[in-house]
Amino acid sequence: MAKFTVDSELVRTLADLLTETGLTEVEITDGDKTVRVARHGHPVAASRSSTDTHVDTTGTVETGAMPAPTVDADHPGTLVSPMVGTAFLSLQPGADPFVRAGDRVNEGQTLLIIEAMKVMNPIAAVRSGVVRSILVEDGQPVEFGESLMVIE
Amino acid sequence: MFEKILIANRGEIALRIHRACREMGIQTVAVHSTADSDAMHVRLADESVCIGPPSPRESYLNIAAILSAASITGVDAIHPGVGFLSENAAFAEIVEEHGFTFIGPSQEHIRVMGDKVSAKQQAIALGIPVVPGSEGAITNDVEALRVAKEIGYPVLVKASAGGGGRGMKVAEDANHLSEALAMCRNEARVSFGDDRVYLEKFLAHPRHIEIQVLGDQHGNVVHFGERDCSLQRRHQKVLEEAPSPVLNSKARNSICKLVTDALRKIKYASCGTIEFLYENNEFYFIEMNTRLQVEHPVTEMITGIDLVREQLQVAAGAPLEFTQMDIEFTGHAIECRITAEHPETFAPSPGRITDYHAPGGLGVRVDSALYSGYQVPPYYDSLISKLIVFGTTRNEAIMRLHRSLDEYVIGGIETTIPLHQKLVRDPTFIDGSYDINWLESWLENGPAHG
Image (cartoon, rainbow over all chains, first blue to last red; front, side, top):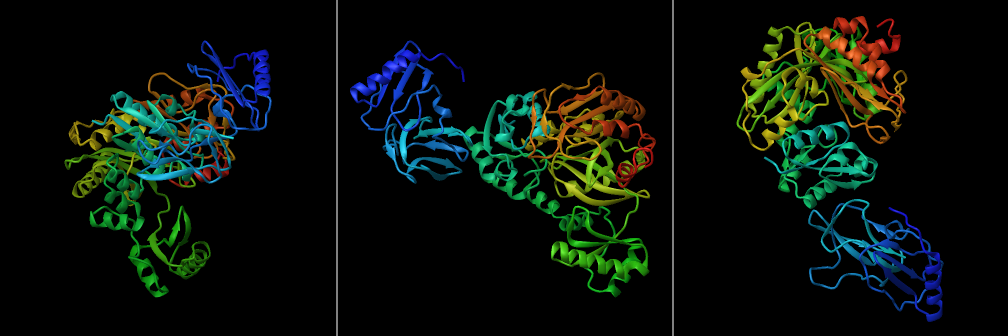
């Protein structure tokens, strides 16, 4: 992945903003760069160039940590696919997804289904945490080892 | 013709299949383990799907994963390559059940030829000569003596449950038969838990000669002549040549006609190879491989036919574009199997390839997936390259082999190139007078002897 310089001044300002306001997540976008700062148990701050322009704030409460530049998909909490197949995010088309970004999940809870050879294989969380991001779309083919979700 | 094919294999053979597909305008899907993510054929294929961790059982032998990958990429057919699932009848069956074409013969033919006992029985039924032996297991010494007298000494006492060259004892004459029986039974009981033994005529100095065949789904069967694969170490082929230095056209035509007539009778459709032991001008069937073989390039060089292309055509239902009369044999070809092993100790040598320079020039072909910087993984068999040369005569091919082996650079790991360099300068090799035991005694005694 391409590395680009992180504006540590900006990150510090945002971190202070979190402390002041009691928010747990702040994200700002400038052109094609987005910086999100969040307070969690692990150091995180995704600096990624994308066309996302939304500002994401959530109300969940967690303990804070200093952000560091990493890429979402390399995060230790990444759930990777144990098989080849098609990922489905809900039990059937049109139904509510199993989980959404921001949801708290428990160990053993079904996060998504991978269909292989007409057999639906539920993929469960290996430990409790919060869904940081969902990296696949409903109905997307996935290979062995492909990153599916980030849970912390 | 198929639009998209999944290659269920790895290494140089996967690259070979990809190349044939690419030349026919067929899209390729490369399935691979995590250890092969940077393999050449994965990089060149139109699509790739990682199907598992390095272990073959969880990747290249993982039928569910392969079928799942075939589903999500929407392929028409699956080519199983060599080894792995290529002779797995259950795999062939399940592939077809899921609506994909299995590029190979029918699962019934795979099943019959995959079992050595049923293959031998099938060969006998089709009039193909087999190694003379007892009908089944020998129950007592009296019966053994009778059978041995019939088939002629020396005889080989073989464990029914044995294999890979193990569980065999030679009896030179009637006086040594009881002892050989007892020893073989003991060893079989200890090694395989089954002390059933049977007898076969022992061939002291056979050559390994195999016939390449191709059948289509319309009842046509042709042969592409023989390959001599007598240079073996621990039952693994090291060097192959076509045609055999010892067969004359009469012997060749006779065995090839026998084989094609037999396969026509059973309506065999795809590539296949019938393997024989050849001694004192007699052929003895040992087995049939119902797939493409590693050494197929030497046959391609002397006939000008692309065997993988023909496999694809046949699998797609096309009739053969040629008859036996159209197939011409020109010149001589030799293939060296180059492995990632120490040339003397044969210790495995996986690792990163530093310098890589393949030989070239007239009549030189390299079938290899190596490249500079490639990491040879430790999880799979050690074959990393096939150097194939063609010459208008055997002598010309040998000189070309000297020259190209000397040019070939594979840096960073040990390879058997130095072994081949010595081998192709040996008088017995140059003479063509080797048999299947020669290479091992040459390796043991050192190139000066042999």
